[in-house]
Amino acid sequence: MSSILSEPHFHSEEAAYAFVEARIWPEGAVCPHCGGFERIGKMGGKSTRIGTYKCYQCRKPFTVKVGTVFEASHVPMHLWLQAMFLLSSSKKGISANQLHRTLGVTLKTAWFMAHRVREAMRLVGFEPMGGAGSIVEADETYFGDKEHVTKRTKKGKSGLSGKRAIIALVERGGSARTFFVERADKVTVTSIVSANIARESRLMTDESKLYGSALDHVDSHEAVRHASGEYARGDVNTNTVEGYFSVFKRGMKGIYQHCSEKHLHRNRPVLAALRGGRHFPNGVTLSLALRSRRWFGRRFWARSSGVGAGATRTRSGLSRRASLPARR
Ligand SMILES: [Zn+2]
Image (cartoon, rainbow, N blue to C red; front, top):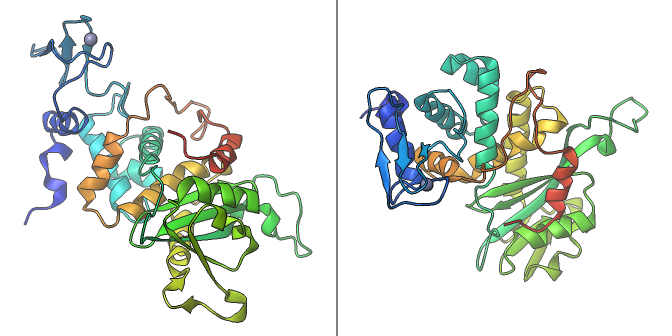
């Protein structure tokens, strides 16, 4: 039995390009400039870079990198694939620092790669979750201090209002989604439920009032009464989502030790994707990340003002995403 790490696309640049091309262009090369696919030739000259094609319709050259997470990056493709593998194969993710040490790229490059891959993985599964016969559990938790803690408790702790509220939806035996919200209130929670859960699903929560209007959006809503010591009633429980939160928090604490609020939402998709991808062989998670073309037109650069600058989205974009129905 040979190790998955000995696959040629992790070592040879030609094999890496072939691997990516087979996934992005399953039916053959497509020109990213004009959309043509009929008159395309592969450039084979000695001085030509690997994977260069020319479109004879618009006369422009291109590679498979255009419009993907690899665009305008000088990092060799096989290193990108190694990074994607590492980012998607470990259950709790991997930090940019670890990537930097493992791949031998600079920390800045590692940070840049990690964020691009995470951004690409964000797309995984934007269809509604659940469906007829499926159970989706929902719960909320509070984690990490907000950047500006306004109120403190007598003991000087930040208290719940000073922490980031997180809502998670987990389909039993399926994927998970997490939402960082300004405030975990009924309106926000209801909009998340309506935008993300298929109506035919069975929703399970605790007795929290936040889910009071959920029945307007799903056919069935059952709640366990934690306050009166009830943790399961038949198959009604929220154990899956609670287990998800515990992995999630350990992942956040252990790996993303200094994870500022600005970037919390970038690390989150990878954790959610990992949770969802756990039932797949590693190669599938990798392909999911590769297939995402959402990248296009939304470039983002690691600026020189220290690791962390360069986000194209604002924090307010976060809560906006959480409270709007699925965009697509
Ligand atoms: Zn063209």
